[in-house]
Length: 251
Figure 1 (cartoon, rainbow, N blue to C red):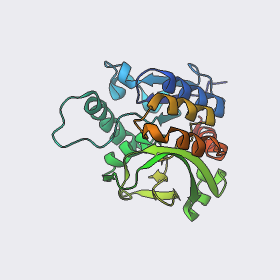
Figure 2: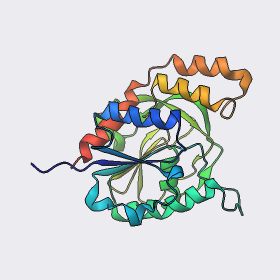
Figure 3: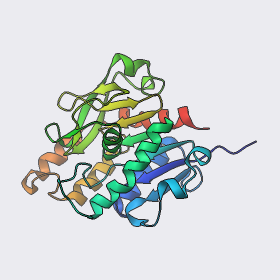
Figure 4: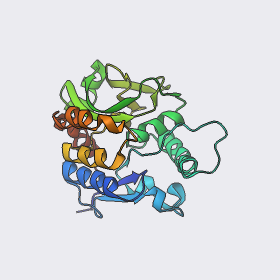
């Protein structure tokens, strides 16, 4: 029997506890074996890796998953070759390639924002969300979609972002929305998906992020309030998106 193609996981963050946790969580939720069925690349740590030159995407992988990031997708006007800018420069051509091929992709938070930028959307900081667990309500299109239709009509997942999409880019469909941030779950074309929430963060994983981020995502004085609102919510309903995506696109 011919072996199934692995999934490619592009991690848009430096090595560390969060990178390890997100990789391990995706593996556990989907049942994919790291290094065999789930191949990960820590992009900031692999400066010589050219995603289009060095990886045979169409023939070598079932689908692509793109992580969140401590970096922002929106950059100040005139920003120079910072690590943030270099990462964006490497990702945008890759995102355009995925969109052009309509290649199965799941972009998580920053990953979706980069897909949105490549698709012509603008970003805004007006609908950013602090570390919390929000409700995402599926639209009629979301309920009938082959991937998101496997979820409950209302799911709960963790958020924590400064930027978000300001508009729905051409060719995209809104699958799930939130009360404050509308664009929580999208499909680009037929086979690319994006989430503003984090289906890859568990309750234990959120504790890691609260500890790691310090007061970067919240004021130090709000730590106990952040813990209370994050650690008391059940977010397991959002994890199903990961397994639904990988089950649907595994080939």
